[in-house]
Length: 113
Image 1 (cartoon, helix red, strand yellow):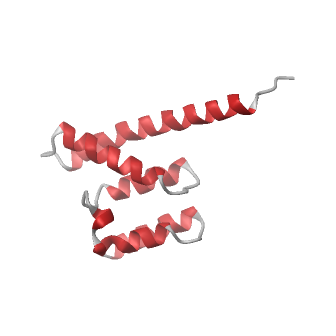
Image 2: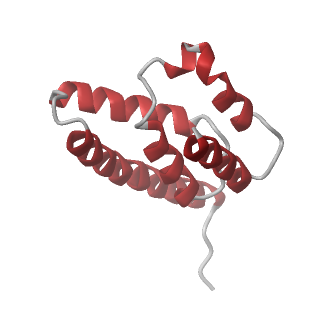
Image 3: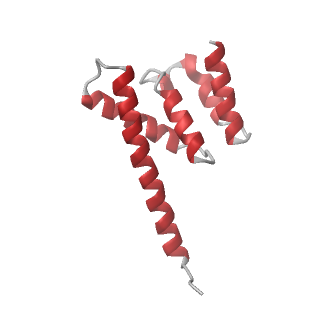
């Protein structure tokens, strides 16, 4: 029987996570470039990195949820974390509810507004 050590498993998981985030970064950059054509390549790269750093801080359960939140955040200004009008977003993300419900609540507010 093949046995995988804890270290090997953790290394594999980190590598898979890095691959996912690298692919998401490419998709985000392409989307931002399409939606905001006046942005420079460095602005696009900075924005994508900012979004990925933000979504990586929250305990989302699936790659789908991470992807959804990342694309939602492209509609927010760069400094949304420091802007009081977007406090509701942080409040939702810090709630003790299932990750999918957090995404649904955010989508609901955006679709209403």
